[in-house]
Length: 154
Image (cartoon, rainbow, N blue to C red; front, top):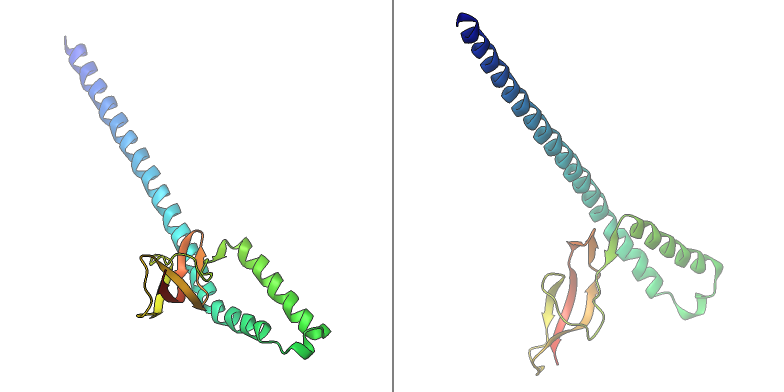
């Protein structure tokens, strides 16, 4: 009978140690997942911060290309700058940065667009974009900078 009691104690110790080991494994797995999520969030925040610093440069390059005088549009230097813009767009696309659609006549979406001006005299039941004032971008599908637009009604 004494052996049975000792055996019961040992079996209880094994069960307790097994339960502790299972909890420790679960805790470690949760810790590992949390650290991976924190690393991903830090990478994303760093990428967002870097891209936000580049967006004004992109805006200026696009303005320069858009306002190129007609008499020098065929100049090789101007064509080179235009080519740089295309290369920049490819690089940004590889980073999952997409320009927000803010074409004239498209529907106003407050999740993606920021209304800077509103045509108070316009009549209609639907708010649409009258003009894009500054390009907006999404990073991996989430807005990183809203498109600044003028809104009217149709």
